[in-house]
Image (cartoon, rainbow, N blue to C red; front, side):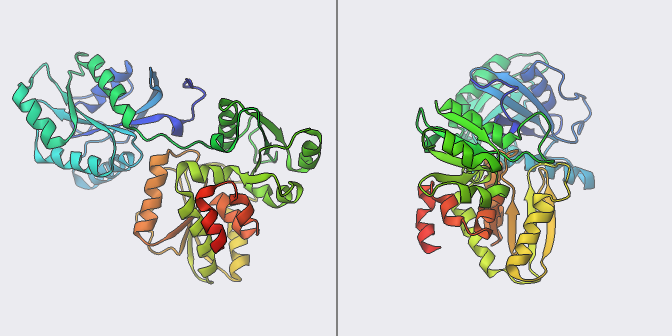
Length: 411
C-alpha cells in the first residue's frame, strides 16, 4: 500500500465536500481528518476558497479531503466562490453532499445530486446536525430515493456517526474508476525498461521530476527493472546491458537523439505519452496531433499546464513548442498560456490546445478538460504526442499502444 509521502497528490483519492453554506462542511472535514484543518464559524460563507487536507485512510490509503464554499453563495464574490467549488467537483473522485438536518431536503440539494450523478461521480449524502434533528425511517428512504444516493446521518460537531461515515466511504470508494497503468501492461516480470533522463539546468537538484519517479515506481511494482541513463550515454548503456530491454522511455525533448540510438526492434515512447494514456484518451490526443496539418498563420493556440513552475530560458511550453509550431506552419501564430488548476471556460477561439502530460492532475480532471475541448470542437494534443509528430517519429513513438495502431495506418 503506497503511503502518504510516496503518493503524488494527483494519485490520491480526491474526496470533495459540497453543500449549502453553514451546512457543516468544514466541521465534517475536521471530524473526518481529526484535525482543525478548516476554519469553522456559525457565520455563513466562512469557507471562501477550497481547503485541502491529505491523510491516510485505511484501507483506501492516501486520500485528500476538499472543503468547498457553499454552492448557494450570492453576490459577485459569491459567484466566484461557487465557480471554484464546481471546479473542485470536476476533479472529485468521490463526493459528499452535506445536508443540514434542520433545513431538510430541498430542490437545491436534489439539483446538486443530479449534477453529481450526471458526472458519474460516486457519492454519499451526509445529513449533518443529527443531534439537533434526526430523520425518521420514512423520510430517510424518501430522501435516498429522490437523491439517488446512500445516506448517512452524523453530528460533525459531536463526532457522532463519523465512524459509520468512514465505513460507508470505504464501500463507496469501490466504485471509483482506477487509473490505467503507466507502463505496467507493456512489460513482464524480469524485463528491463531503459529510462532516458536528461540532466540539465531545468532538472531539480538532487531529485528526479515527478513523471520519472512515477514510471520507475510502476516498473518496480510490476517486478521489472528500471535502468536509468542520460541521452548521450544511451548507446553504451544498450550495448552493455547484455539483454534487449522491453522498452526505452525518454524525455520528449530528447526524442530525436534517443530514436537514433535505439534499435528499431526495441519499443520506444516518452514519459509524456505514457501520461497521455494514463490520464486521458490517447486516441483523441493522437487525432489532435494530426490537426496540426490544418493550422495556418494567424491561428490561435492555447498551451495549458496542470502546474506552475519557474520558467527556464528555453522552456518547453513557452519557447520550444511555439518555435516548432511556427516552423511547421511557416508563419506567426497567436499563443495563449494557462497554468494550474484553472482553464479558460471559452476555448472556442482556439484552433488547437496543447496540454502538458498532466502528472499533477488526476484522471477525472484531465478527462474533464478533454471533454471541454471536444464540446467546443477544439483539437487537443499533449506535449509528448505533439513532439513525436513534429519530429517525424510519430508512428514509432506510439507503436507500443494497440489502441492507436489503426491511426498509424491512417497516418
